[in-house]
Image 1: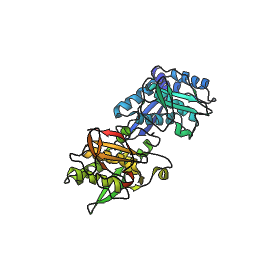
Image 2: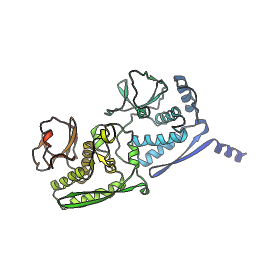
Image 3: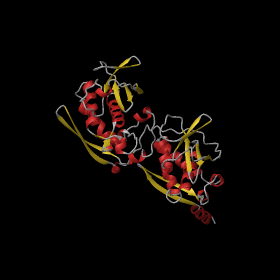
Image 4: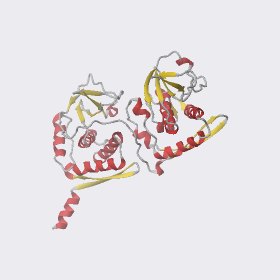
Length: 385
């Protein structure tokens, strides 16, 4: 009799397993949590799905997600990628998009995040509460809180004025937390998944060559990443293998240089080691690349290079810096013991402009491009070690 019961219990759950960067995520889905969604999209059908899955034995899956998040110290954005892949295993996106979205929403809310649903004309819009400055995806406000759309990219452009989106009024008591887009730790990747890229540039009549290890999965992580504020953007780190293949070599190359010359070396590396192309020509839209994406990409623009230069200077010298945003350009300025050229004064401190994007002139530290000298700018980020 006991053997029969054990066998029945094994049949009551379906096992799933998939690789998630350097680990493997294994989970069981109890058969009570395998909820169909084959009716039309409506408030009542969404409520019915929630009632059925909320009374199922879903708790072990949420516990498993939490355990994995804690073990690998996943930021919210990376954790959301885990939830996406989990929902894809349970209900493939291509087979039933609404069911796939409902599972993502349910797993995120039961993980404690304040996520919401909106119902449009055959569209299921998925939102999450976020209190950060994110500027290029739709959102709505409720009770002073901002809810950002997580699946806008799946539908292309939606006219949220003409198309009425009705909120799904489902109260989930544990869904209280705000979601953050800050990525302060890249996931570890299996060493075998890295490729090697040759990067070279000339400095002081000498050619420098780098064999940098890069992971294509980084592009997938940031494929639908929104336009976050500059503090969040500039502080996205490199993955471990990429860091180990580049930063120690750069440190070695500047070891015999004084600080200003070393920063000049990093400035020219960022300026000349990569091909320039603006985002409209490269991607058809504005898109900021993380430092590792800039290393991966064949082309990059001023935003990408400013972020990479900031990262390199912070890691190697850890100097105070400010980001200067012009109407059509962004540049960096670094604080040295003794400024070079015409200083930028900000909050009583002197900074020297370090132009990390190719210009018509071969700009030295402290020199501003001639077309920008009379153009106003905003300081959009200040870094103090």
